[in-house]
Length: 316
Image (tube, rainbow, N blue to C red; front, top):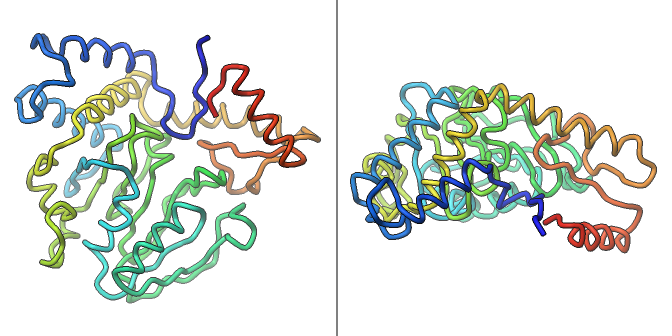
């Protein structure tokens, strides 16, 4: 039975991506070798790496002065890389869910962390407002979309401090004003590929004062200097990412993706709002277009819903 992937991540992949990946596993770029066995230092793979980074810049309209970095792992690695590279004395964080909370815990290992606001008091059903960020904060960190709780910040914040965002589960879902950010990072598996790849978009002049004690494999500056090839890159995941970006581009780019996502989310939220059985978790103002979260009247029915959904051919 063909199943439908409703996972928050690894996300569903387009037919274009799966077919072309399968072909590359058989014979990559006419080399007579599988994508899985070519050298990650070969000119053929270097071209894949360069093209994927160029597509990110094109689709997101990344301005001059920024670079794209690929790293093994996922977004959680950035929870320590960001403070390793940026935190000198104090950083400000917004707590809006599990991944934001995990980033806060990691940053506290490197210096003072000011949690400017939290929505934990209401089980992360909303995005806090009206908070103040200290002038002497080295940076302000937030998570744009909260996969587990279904809230999303869809407007780029205007702040005086350096702005850092974990955009793992809504990157490439809508246009972004990159110029407002100093670092955007994301794990690939939720919105742009498969597990095993972390992506960061970094304003280069941000890294002039990185501490000499930063380990080389956690040094953004070194990753940029070596075109993400200082360490062995996750070659297969980078190739898949490139295909996903080609597919997004073929549809018309991020304005089209935004319209598609708004229409799909509206269908589900409209149904939830009229239902007397299902209940949306997040408040209406902060609802995610990426992850529609809801419950039934009790935990037993939640479990039954999951069981019967799996039996019907859905992965959730």
